[in-house]
Length: 167
Image 1 (cartoon, rainbow, N blue to C red):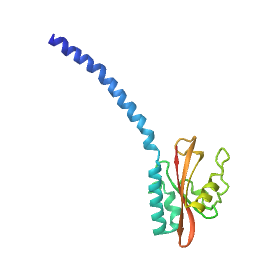
Image 2 (cartoon, rainbow, N blue to C red; image 1 turned 120 degrees about the horizontal axis):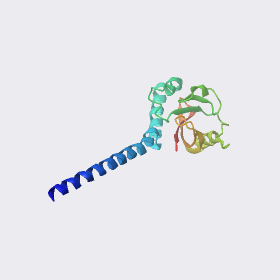
Image 3 (spheres, rainbow, N blue to C red; image 1 turned 60 degrees about the horizontal axis):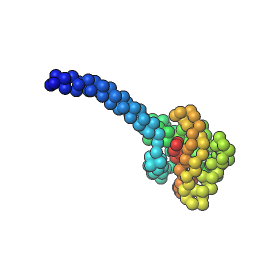
Image 4 (cartoon, rainbow, N blue to C red; image 1 turned 90 degrees about the vertical axis):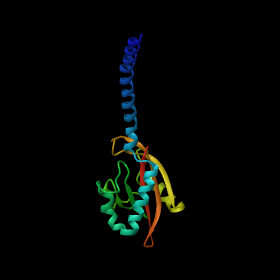
């Protein structure tokens, strides 16, 4: 009987261990997307860092600092944007080619004027959270994105600082 119990235990282990290993692999794979995406809290922390940088080093320094893909301001799909009060992009983290472009009439793929909404809400309330449809730089697919934006006043001039979070 003792030999039979040992054999049964061994067969059970040989059956259960591969299943447990498979479950572990699935759990790790399911958690991977969360690590490739920034969160609302991480976006807020990035805006805080960007604001401290702007107050310390100024708007002109943000152009290069925000766009360095190996720097502190690009983290997975999170990156900062700085616009002037008229909607002109001054420093874009992911696409610096947008710098100098007036984006106030920029619309998402569904035609929503999300940038105007964000700028007007920031102007009225000091902060905005605007959700729209945009091209995700990591997946290359259209995805929901929420732009978190806040007003900054630097040397007496108003600016809008924003970081978007893909959903």
